[in-house]
Every structure is written in C-alpha cells, then in structure tokens.
Length: 287
Image 1 (cartoon, rainbow, N blue to C red):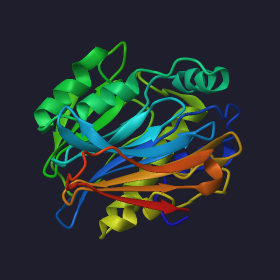
Image 2 (spheres, one colour):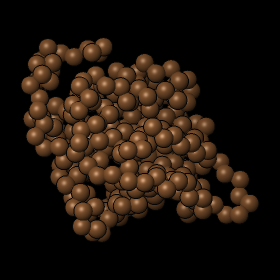
Image 3 (tube, one colour):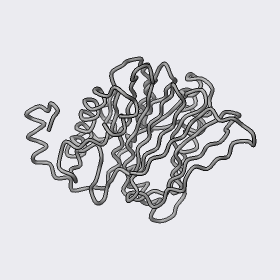
Image 4 (cartoon, rainbow, N blue to C red):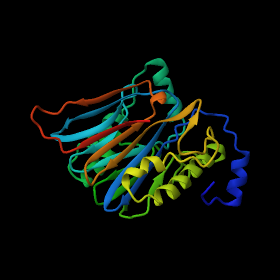
C-alpha cells in the first residue's frame, strides 16, 4: 500500500466487509495537466451495460457522449470544450436503476438533462441548464470548459451549491456529500468506501504528469482485488464497467471499457451532417 492512510482508517479497512454490494460508487475527477484541462470518471455498475458513443449535433452544437443504451444515461462534451461528468448522491439510486434494467422499465430522465447541458456554447449556460432543465441533475456534477470547472452539489432535498475551480490539484467527488453532510452515504461501510476511494483518487491523480495516464491512475488497486475500497471495482455484484476521460483543451473524448464487464460495446454512432468536419476526436480502448 503506497499511500498515506490514518491509523483509524487502516483499522476500519481491516474490519470492513460490505454486506450490500448493490452500490453505485462512481468516481469523478477534474485536473489540469500540463495546460490540458481534463474531466474523468470511473463508472461502476451492478449490471453489464450496453454502450455506444454518439457523435451528433444537438441544438446546432457538435457533441460526443457515452450512451448507456439500457438506462439512457449519457456523459460527454461538445465542440467548445464544454464537458460534464456526474456521480450519484441519492442513496437507493442504484437499486432503482437495477430495477429499471431487470424489469425493462422506463429509463431515468438524467440522460436527456445531461445531453441538453452539453449542447450549450458557454460554461455559464451549461451550468444553468444542468441545475434547472427539467428539474436539474442531482448528485455531484462537474461542468467544465478548457479553462475553469464548476462543481455542483444538488439533491432532490437540497438546492444546488456551486463552486468555481481553477486549480492544478485534482478535484474529486465520490458518493458522499461534500457541502451537504446529510447527502449520499453518511455513515458505516458505504461511507467508508466512498471516503477511501476519494482519498485514493486524489493521491493517484495528483502524481499524473500526462493526461493520457489518468485512466490508468484511476485503476490502481491499493487493497485486495474484490475490496469495495478500490477505485476500480471488481466485486461480483459491483464492478467498474468503463472509464471516461475528456481532454477539453484538445477536444478529445477517450472511452476505455472492460470487455467482460459490458454486455456489448456497439461502437461509435456518427450522426454528423454529411460533409461536416468534426472538431471532437474520439478514442476507444478495450481493456
């Protein structure tokens, strides 16, 4: 274990046995690396998602985003270097999503909200859309341009709190409240898991000197393989299915997915107008 952990945390880790593996424990990261502003995410799921990348125009703006074809979840960026990633704060959200998958029910509205937000031309308009369109996006949301990032913390019970970031050090959120101490996981095993994954990501990402190394840094394992504390989840009932890295400065969307953790990766769906010269570069890597 090559990172600093307090004695108390280490003792808690040694005793940790998560009984409920139905968790939705994503990690979102923002960091400037050698003048490249980056958003990144580990996406954890209790089911194998069916994924595709959509490259299209929304509201006259070129966008590229990862699309979960089962739940309609979407995250991505646009031609102006405006990107968005999100991590849930709603306890029980994972169970609700699992029921959607199992019963073939109606997908959530979050995908549509996020697609609307990334179709805006400015950071200000993207943030405004993310917190207000159709009720806004709940949870921890990072909305960024190539220069600045705005973090939003919001739940159905809490009005959004916004903070502007322009730092070289990584900003990381997992699944417990940062401003709202009663949001997300607040105690016990799940809370410890959320806290430890945040610490791991902060320490790993802070050492990165090339933006292309961020995904690998977010896969480092500091605990036994199936531990719920690892950034990359490999438990039977909860696993990291994909990673998203957005280089907003150079307009590059990079998706890395674990072949055995997705039902299917359909590929890149190009819906751009004929003859249109794309401004966003898409990279896909199978792990």
